Length: 212
Image (tube, rainbow, N blue to C red; front, side, top):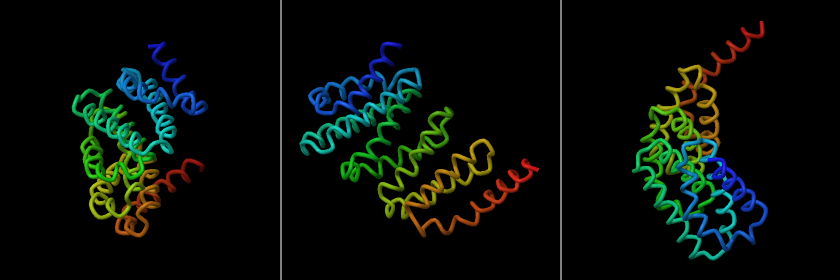
């Protein structure tokens, strides 16, 4: 595991700082990085996702046809990881979907609905790491296609996040997600503001009481 962690760390730094050098090896990295993305250790999975992010930056301005081929292969493997059903494979796949939403450009347009359904499916997963990743992904979905998100998925996800506001330990993550969603969908968030403000006032009141 220590060698694997060292490997993904080095790949991440090479992707960030030696892009021309690493370009020739991107295909090989995409083939093997899933070992790290499905590792038992959270730190290795997250670092492998950062390495993937760096590789996406390398191919962003390169050959269009090869970029689409690589992105398609990565996305298909992510869907396969979801089907494997282990905590590690699901989490690794969600991390990759997050990177594709951020850097995949128009590639994710045809996969947007499926990505939304995948994220929604795991919102109540038993593992906290998967639930936290879902909360991080919801604003990414909103940012990628604000109109589609507002029309089809905003209500479902806001019901979920509003439920999180009722739980003190999850409230901060929910507030952050809702704020980022609001930045993406603008006035479409208006019907949900009254419910959110109840917990904003409660949080401010609790903070004031703690200071006193």
